[in-house]
Image 1 (cartoon, rainbow, N blue to C red):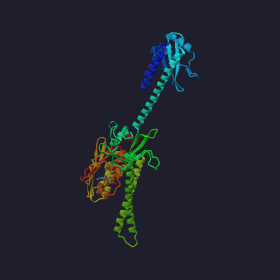
Image 2 (cartoon, rainbow, N blue to C red):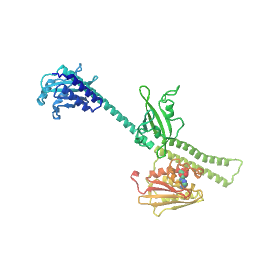
Image 3 (spheres, rainbow, N blue to C red):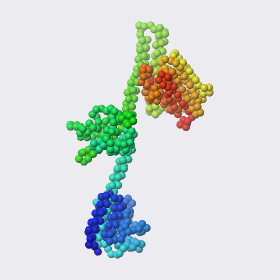
Image 4 (cartoon, protein in one colour):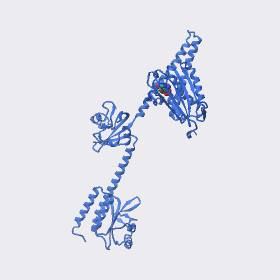
Length: 527
Ligand code: ADP
């Protein structure tokens, strides 16, 4: 029998449920409330809601049914289909209920499908302990609750999908290799990823809510080529008569909080709403230091190489054409001297070409050292010294190795290249002469070889940089001394390939010492 306030109660319940759905309460809580309301409205004793998943129907909410009894309801969740009229088709429902009644005291059932559009999302059951059947009105009441439940499920799925998308987006943003920040139309920072923290040297927490200009501080940047100027000119709308360009690219040196700078390229992309209004600006910040370095390197390479190739070629050509003159008769001494210059310059060219080949092998990864030899560094040092003694009158070359200096595993030709380079530099960079000492020391698991000169020395902040490719100290002596800045770079590569280390010491005006260490015994990587 219907209660007099039946409709009022139904409306109140439905209102309560709508509020719960709008407040985005947890889906289980919303389904529990729907079940409680519909069971009460239908004067039932128990109810359950099962939702359709990949593996069929699964119970998601129960009312008046204990967990222990739940298994008895499983036959009600199998073989269910939807009829053409939209109602449920549950074969042998009566039989199933009779069976249920033996275990649980429930005799009467009403079941309705929950659908969103044409999609079947689940089923709602209400049970009564007494026999008989549910009225048409009971069906209508339950229908209104089933609709609410379907909306709740639909909303929850949409919400879960949106959450998943948001998480995915956040993960992409956070782990992107480029720095990314999302800005409001008036350039306030809304989000700031990890890579951008590394590039700018600022933590995300310090930047959210701050202004774009607090983070993107340019040291130098082409005037007018920034986001403010672009926005003032109407970006992202193209200037009149121009084709639309949806992104804006700005390149320059960014100042970090510690005062250092970093070269970056920033691409600003607009995010527009359906009306075409600017909602966000997405700034993609890329560290272009390596790119710039590579560009600088290429131009250094071209200028160094062209200079280094031109000089010996010009000398060889000059001497050769002088000697060829038919109107002159050269004394044997002049002939000897001129041919000596030609020979030396040809040697220089060969060394330069060898070095360039080594560098290109290093870059292509084809550089290999043969570590199977047993190298007597003391003997090698004597041979190198002997060779250089014939080339310099100003320098005294001393070799100082303890007796019984152990042999080390290594590639003799390459180690000779290192020693030649170090001794050659020691002579080149001590223009006033002095002593060049090649000394060896023995340690437990390694040997060290040092080349010490009494030359111009090396400023502290250049001690590491001189091992970089093409790097030469920018001073008067180096400028007038021939060289490519490749010798120490190659020496370092060779020593590293042997599992050793190389470093420089010394102060300006006090000479320099270059030392390399090599393992005494084969290391696992050599075997
Ligand atoms: P290169 O001698 O061809 O310029 P290197 O790679 O051998 O190239 O050396 C790099 C730079 O290191 C040199 O240009 C020079 O400025 C500096 N340098 C190398 N050896 C010495 C040394 N013994 N004393 C002072 N400066 C040195």
